[in-house]
Image (cartoon, rainbow over all chains, first blue to last red; front, side, top):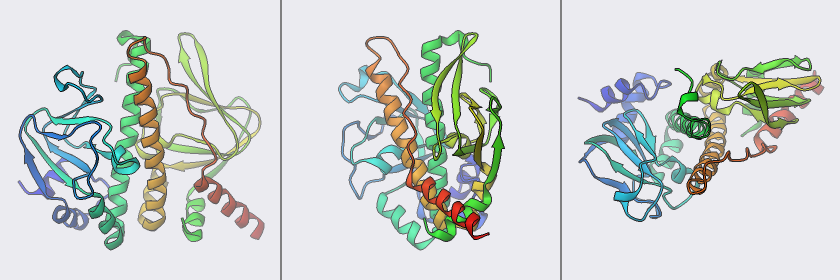
Length: 162
Length: 164
């Protein structure tokens, strides 16, 4: 299955034209990661030449917020196909704030900071579309985080029906 | 953001004059816009049983609804007008138009929004981790500050109005 089809299938870049989607396919190669692969650990430093943001095409990634013994850390969240991770570190800091691990076999596209900077200078509409996708993912993350807080306070019984 | 982009962004927004007590956003209902206080005051509250708990009060230059702007969905709180108030509505549709028309300005805007959301995510996550040992408590909502972006937009709007 081509990367373009995977991107389209995920409905991830709703603002992109087919032409932009095709350009993105060339820039963001999709790779396969085995179950258990650690993308990074909380507290580790982001290297300039390492992928900063991943876009999950297939599979699931678990995100945990502490470093110590990974087997004892409760999973804070499981990410599914169509979701991105690494955004907070990409935008804000040099240190990863959570441990990200493949919960299943994962197909994911990735981009480094340098690649993103290059993209925004060479192909502004595509760079803007990617930034829109990143901001939208962060909005969803904040909404999910707020909901977890509210659920924890009110109790599961108070969770509104969707 | 350059002046032309700021001006174009201003044209894509709608200005509304609202009366005291009017409801701008209802908790749980679909919301697809961000609202910037042009003048007056907005009060944000959430349901707690049968009563409403006030979370924040927004003054001129402050805003609410950036999550709905980027990802329309059910509102997490209600927003009411306090006193005569004028707001600028920035809809999801207008954002998409702005991205199409002015990608450079949109990139600047989206970057600013993404940075704010990343900060909020960090604050909320830290609040959850810190409170995990001693029972959960609400993280105090951070007060919106007058960001340079909105200040620039308001300045451009003032300038345009004076020029008419």
